[in-house]
Image (cartoon, rainbow, N blue to C red; front, side, top):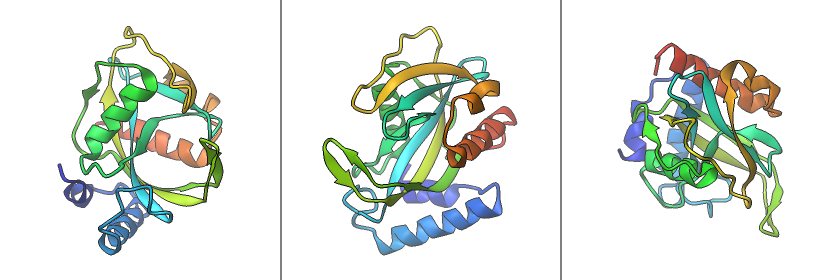
Length: 188
């Protein structure tokens, strides 16, 4: 599904999410040529996913090298308009899991996330915003996992009830909690 239609069809679950949706749509309308590219140094679309196990009581997380926290999988659109495909590709690349199923083609969470200045591949990356589109995926705990050393230094299934013990970014933990709640209540 085309990213603009997917975002337009998203039903916000809170006033903050409605405001983020409106802001994202406005930014897209003013930056149609490069909102899908990280060359837009102010903000760009990214696609992430929460990967649940078959019993929906654990999530597969990566230890993100830049953020120094257990994190969801995801990455830059890099020009790809199919953000669900981006989420699946990033999940496979970052975890080594080959068999990933989509729980839905609908967006589960829409957020604007700050990315603070850092060094990546020996180059400075200025502070900017990720216009974050998130999906829900499912995978088997039996499938082997592996890290992607240039991005993460660990991959692990974490029980949902213990997730806060692993995440050191409170502003992102709120999003994980929101997604887990929506998935467990089947409200997305």
